[in-house]
Image (cartoon, rainbow, N blue to C red; front, side, top):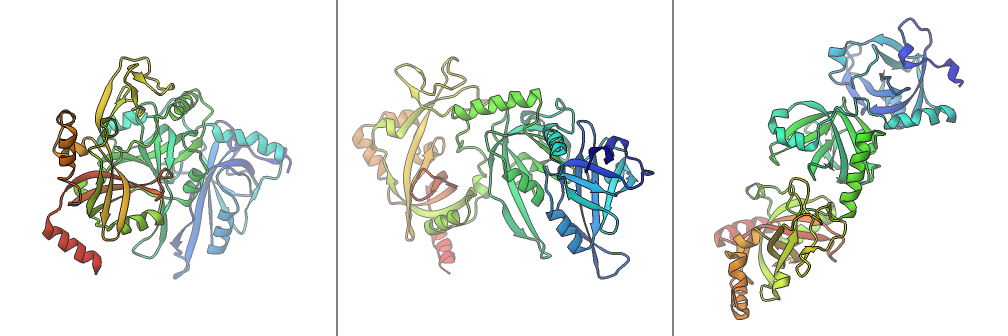
Length: 467
C-alpha cells in the first residue's frame, strides 16, 4: 500500500478512475435503514463517516447496501481509526441538501461506497497511520470560532435551535440510558457535563452509539473538547440551555490549539483545587416537578440499579436530627471566590480568616464568606432508613422556620426542645439521590424541600405504594 498510489482529498475529481483515499476517521454515524423503493417490502441500509488526510481537507463518505454488508462494514472501524477507501464513486455534493445532515466539508465532492464496487479497509501502513493520527487533534473549524458556555447561557433562548461551535472541558460522564421507542426501535442516550472558565456545569447530550463510544473513552476533568456544529436548544424540563451531538457534529478531543491549552490548564487547576467537587445545589429539578413517590427501600433499590442521579418524593420520618450538637457541626462557614466562575467549598480558618485550600484561586482576594446550616439527618419509614441525608441552607431555614441568627441565639436546652418539634414527625420530603463512595450505603440523599405531611395525602400515596 504505497502512499504514492493514494489520491489526496484535495485532488479528488469525478473523472478519476479507481480512486483510493487514505485518511483518519474523524466522525461517524450509526447505521440507519430506509424502505427500498425498487424492492417493496425490503429496506436499504446506510451509514456515513468523515475522513481527513491533511490539516485542511476532509470529506464525507456514505455507504449503502443490505443489512449484512452495512452492519459488518460499520463494525469494522470506528472514530480514530485510519482507513483506506478503495474505488468509491466521487460525486458532486449539493451543500444545501446534504450538509444539512452531514458535517460541512471543504471538498466539493462526497464519496459513495457500495458492496459491488468498493472496499473500506483498516490502514496497515504504520508510517501512514503515524502521519494521519495527529490530525485527530486539529479542529475542523477555526479554533478561535467558538462560543463559551457563559455566552450560551447569557444568550439563553435566543440561541434555541442554533448550530455553533463549543470549546469546553469534560466535567463528568453519566452512564448511558437505554430505551425503546413506541415503534419498537431501541435507542440510547448519554449526558456529559461540560465546564469552562465561565460556567461550571453545562449539559451535552449524545444519542448516536458512535458518539457515545467516543465520549466513554474520555477522562473527566482531564479532557478538552472542540465540538464543531453542536445543536443548541432550550431544555424546558430543566429550564436551562443544553447542547446535542448530531450527525453534523465533529468532536475533536484535546485539540492542539492555544485556546484549548489554556482551557486545559484551567481545568487542571479547578480539579486540583477542589472547585469541581459536586456542587449539590446545581442542576436541581424544581421541587414542584418532583412527583415520583418512593419508600426508603425503593430509593435504595433505584440507586443500586443505576448510578444516575434521580429525584423522588418520600413520606418518611426524620429519625435523626442533631440540632443540639456543637454549633460547628450544625452551622458551617465557607469561603467563596467570584460566583461567576466557581465556588470553593473548603471551610474557612476563622482564626487566620483565610481559606484552608492552598490551591484556591481566590485565596489572596478579599475574604467573602457564606454561612449556613449544614446538617446530616436520617430519614426512616416502614421499609428502612436512609442515613446521613444532607439538609443545608436555604432549605434548612425554610424547613426549621428559623434563621441562622435566631438559631445561634438559642440555649442548649432550647435547641434540644426545638429538635423535638421535628424528630419522629411524618414529613413530605423531596430528595435528590446521588451515588456516593463516601457512605456505606453507596447512595447519598440531599433534601430539596421538607415539610410536615398532610395525613390524608400520606394515606393516599402509601396505599398506592402497597398495591
